[in-house]
Image (cartoon, rainbow, N blue to C red):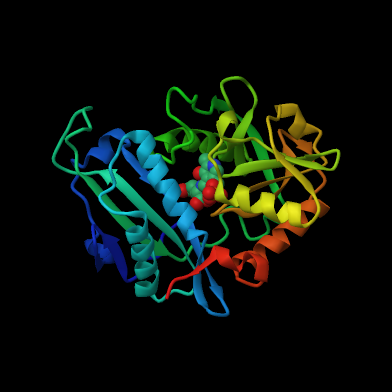
Length: 305
Ligand code: PPE
């Protein structure tokens, strides 16, 4: 999806003009995928732009860095403040936010120990990730021929830039075959997640989503959905699912910061009732929660100014 430029990007402690936010071609992360990043959304609320679950996203960024053995030269609080400052500087009431910490210019080679860590935060307006009608019409999924990373190759728990080569292989394979998104299986053959979202199925009235141990990212939207589902009186658990759980699901949806809650209408051409009643109820409550319209979830909306 094309990027719409905004005013400023935060780079290593200062706001610079959008077009000046550049890196050297010999930046380590460009060669070796040595970066960690986040995808966050800010929404317009009655009190002004609010960044949804900002603290948890920044904490996950630090956990990704920890897995890589990368020392981010800022504190969690400093990057929370920097994210708010960036959103405020663009003047946008809602946007997508992309913080990234990466090994910078100056060292080449696989020994990352002497490398410097650079940090930047950009934001821009970003529409519906899987299409405007993804909740009502639903998306068509294809099981990828590419396997999700194993925990002992490229840890899927870390949101590492290099990990996303695997996601892109699956996404493009699905698009070229006429589908909207790819479901990825872990090396043990069980479902992990989609190329850029966690997945939920409903079977016998119970919602199930594969956890981190199944090769999924520990999604913040997944966690939000678990809370909303419980509050709606639905049983929801993190557990393993097989590919055939998807084929015979009562309903299914994918969720992520970018995709929000999007219904699934088929997996490998086996149709699934769409949009299902649980999916619709959860998607509606999520839509309200991120906009600060539900009192009990308001603590998730961290005001940018
Ligand atoms: N799994 C993967 C592989 C993933 O990339 C995401 C986010 C999720 C699960 C859901 O995580 P969370 O956003 O915390 O609920 N994918 C990001 C988009 C990837 C992209 O750059 O494109 C996102 O939603 O921001």
